[in-house]
Each structure stands twice: as C-alpha cells, then as structure tokens.
Length: 413
Image (cartoon, rainbow, N blue to C red):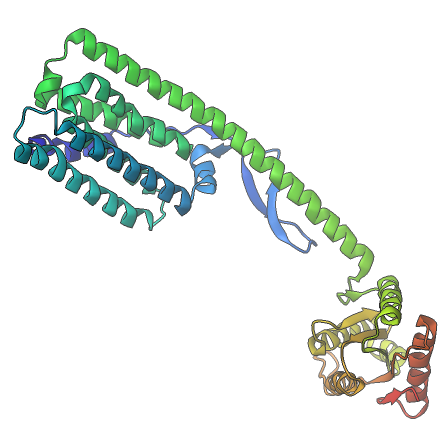
C-alpha cells in the first residue's frame, strides 16, 4: 500500500524548491582584514558593518560531524520504529506474511536506501547539504506515518520534525523550505491517503495551525540562536585580536624589525638564562660574535640605503644557515651574535664558516662590484666562565680576527 502514495513526494519537493522564499535574516558581520605591519593576517571584527546572513553563520557553525550526528539519530529512529512494528505483528489482524512485507520489510528497505543516499550526499558538504537532509527526513517521516497510520493522530506530530531539525542549521531559508515541504506533503497525503482523507475540516485546521505555529516558533528561535552565536563569534574574535596585538607588541620589544633577528636586550637576557642553566646542568653552549668589515666605508661610498640592504642580507644569510635551537641577534649597528646550544664546537664553526662564505660571495644588484665580508669571534662556554667572561672571550676573538686581516674566524684560546 505504501508505494501507491509515494510518487507524489518528489512532486512536493519540486514544488517547494520552486516556491522557496529568498529573504534572509541579517545580523553581525565578520570580515577578514589583513592588518598592515602585523605578523598575522587574521579575522577582524568591523564594528561599522554589523550585517551577516544566518546562512553565513550556518556555514561557520556546521560541519560533516554534525551531519553525521543527524544521520545517526535517524538510524536510531528507524530502529525504534522497526522494533515497534515487529511488536505490532502480534496484535495485527493482517496475515503475518502481508504484515511483514507491507509494514516492515518494504518500509525498512526504503528507509535504509534513503539513509545510505543521504550519507553519500553529506560527504559533499556543500551549501545544499542541509536541504538534502531535510528532504531525507521528510521522506522518512512519510514512510513512518504510512506504516503506523492506525494511530495517525499521534503520528501527525512527525510532520513537525523536519521543521524542528532545520533550527539546528541556523538558516531561515531552510526553515521556510522545511515548512513548505511538510505542508505540501501533508496536503498531498490528505488528498491521496485514505486515513487522512477522512479528517474533518476542524482537524485539518487544528493541525495546520500547529504546523504554522511550529514554523514561526522555529524562525524566532533561529533568529535568537543566530544572534547569540554571532555575538559569541565576535567575542572570540575580539579576544584573538587582543592576543595577536599582545604578541605583536611583545615582538616589538624583543625583535629588531629591520633584520627580523632578536635585539640587543633579548640577546643578553637569553644568554643570562642559558649560562645559569648550564651551570646547574651542563650542556654544550657556544657564542659567536660577528662584525661586518669596513661597513662605514660601504655606507660612505654606496649610501645608507645600500648599507641597510647589506645589513638585511647579512641577517638573512645568518637566519638561513642556523638550525632550530640556534639563536641569532643583532646586538649593534653592524654587529651580530649567534648562541649555539647542544652543538659541538666543530659543528658551530662549520655553520659560522658557511655564513662567512655566503656573505663574501653575495652579489648586490645595486652595487655588483662591492664585496662584503665579516669577521667572526667564537668561544665555547666552560664551567668556570661567567656570562661576562663568555662574552668578553668571544669579543676578544672578534678583535683578533679584525686585527689579523678581517674576513676570518678566530677562536678563543
């Protein structure tokens, strides 16, 4: 009997889609603005544009996991319905074979097919996925209604389910679609399904009023939930904005923005901490100090703009040659420092030599004939050293490299 009345369901869906309202509720707007000079591009709240559609909030809120939860609940509903149907077998006047075929096997097969198709469709995760879910829910509602039609006054409440489920998607257009689809299916079944065709005008009017009331209630709840959700999103974004600002301000206090290396203050703070730790629990710690050779002459001959390019290039070469645990800083105008941890002196010297060679062979577009070199002083830490001793030993090695002809590495004896 069920298959006789199932043909009008696709017609109801097409009618509902064709007449689907397009008006959408508006609320606060969240836009992405790249912040000039900041270390991150991020979502920013624009207080002058507080308009966003519920559809946008829905896309932010829903995901495949939520769709999967809905499908799981539908499987549970089908399982409960099938169990009740089997229980009714003992109280039905129909022959067991007819009952199992018409009331159990055929409806169950249709429901399983619907859920399998829905599961395939939700993998697409597009903006129309919620509509697929609502159509699938409505189809299952219609099947359940026809299976349990002897208590159709109770089962009429199932027509409210697609409308109520659509609330979770925070989309007014989807609620409109669910309402018109439920109404179209109810009218179709009223005309074609004998038990419903016997409903009086008062009964039809009462149910229609309940359905309309549920529709308007769903719209108001969606508006409220959407406003609350958007306020929450805006609050979170403001907190993130404050966090990013704090991170940026911290970077300003710790970094040399011209070279993107740590500054003089941070270098000495970090070296203090490492020396203190190394005294408590010894590990390999070494310090390299670098100074660009004859940098004042480059500035005088090529101009300060080219001098800045030399500084930036030297910093980039240092960064490119260092490893994760290494620490580089610009502690003077043309002076750089590298702190090595957990490396043998030989490994540190190999890295410093690469830095020296890369800078010597670097070609500058605006001054192709200029050869830039650096002198490097290196010293490993020993347990008897203080932080001042370590720095002075490296500085003395640097002075020795300068004195002995520049463009070389000298190690503390």
